Amino acid sequence: MVNGFIAARARFLYDDSSMSASRAAKTAEQPGHGSPVPFPHRHLLGIEGLSAQDIEILLNRSDYYVDLNRAVEKKQTSLRGRTIINLFFENSTRTRTSFELAGKRLGADVINMSVATSSVKKGETLIDTAITLNAMHPDLLVVRHQDSGAVALLAQKVGCGVINGGDGSHEHPTQALLDALTIRRRKGRLEGLSVAICGDILHSRVARSNIHLLNTMGARVRLIAPPTLLPAYADRLGVEVFHDMRKGLTDVDIVMMLRLQMERFHGSFVPSTREYFHFYGLDYEKLGFAKSDALIMHPGPMNRGIEIDTEVADDIHRSVIHEQVEMGVAVRMACLELLAQHLPNWRGTTPAGT
Image (cartoon, rainbow, N blue to C red; front, side, top):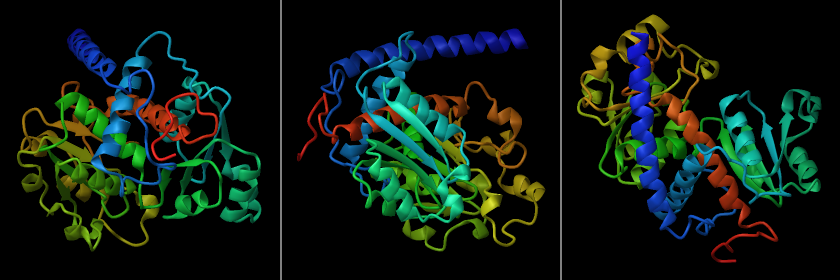
C-alpha cells in the first residue's frame, strides 16, 4: 500500500512538472515574465473592488513564481533593500510564515512583530501603532487583525503599501487568490466552474473573499451550511444557498471546506461537533454527489473528523490541500512585488497611472 502511494505521488509530480513546463513557456511569452505587469492598486485590502483584469495580473505573476519556487535557485533581488513588517494581532502559522518566506525569497528584510509582547498589550491604540511604525519608514506592511475594517483604517495612517492578511470576518484576499491559483492550475480555468463552499460561512473571511473572486471570474458559487452558520444576507451575494449537503454538492467541480471557527462562537451555533460532521462533514458518501474529478480544498488548519474525514483530506488524487499551501508562497511573492511597484525608486516596471 505504501509503495502504491509513493508510485501514485510520483506520477502526480511528473504530470504536474510537465504541466508547469508548459505553463512556464506560456508565461515567458507574456509581458509580465521578466518584470511584472503594472498593478493599479497601492494596497491589497480585499478582493471586493478588484476587476477581473486585476485578478488576472495577480494570478499570472503568481504562476511565474510557482515555477520559480520549484527551481533550485529561488532567491530574487526585486525587493532588495526593502523592509517588510508582518504585524499579526491574531495567531497565525501558515499565513505569517508564507509571507515571511515570500519576502525573503524576493530579497527583502522581513520583520515579524509579536503583538503579544508589543505596546498594544500596554494600551497603545491601533492608530498609535500605525503612526509609530510609519515613523520607521517600512516599505510594505502585512497586517492581520481580529476586527473587520482594522487593516483598512491602518492603511489610511501609513505611507507604505499594506496587504490585508485577514481582518475579522471581513476578508482574506491572499487566501482567495491562492485558492483560485490552485483551481486554475488544476482545471485550466475558473470561468464556468461550479464551486461549493461548505461549512462556517458566517464567521469566514475566506468565504467572503472567495465569493467575490469567483463571482468576478465567472464561476458559479454554492454555499452549503446550516442556517445558523449563514449570514442573513447570503441570498444577496450572487450565490445559491443549500442546507442539504448532498443536494448542494451535486455535480460540483470544486468542494471547498471551511474550518468551524469555534473561537468566534458567541452562543450555540451547532448542537455538537459529532452532529455537525454527520450532516456537514465531508466524507466519501457525500463527496459521491460531486463530479468524479471534483477537487477537495480546505484553507487550514483542518479539524479532522469535524469538517472533513481524514481519508478524504489525504486523498492523493483529489485533495489539493497541500498544493494550496505551496500556492500561498507564490501568491504572496506576487502581491509583495506588485505593490512594491508603487514605492519610490522601483527598479522594475513603472505602475500605471503614476
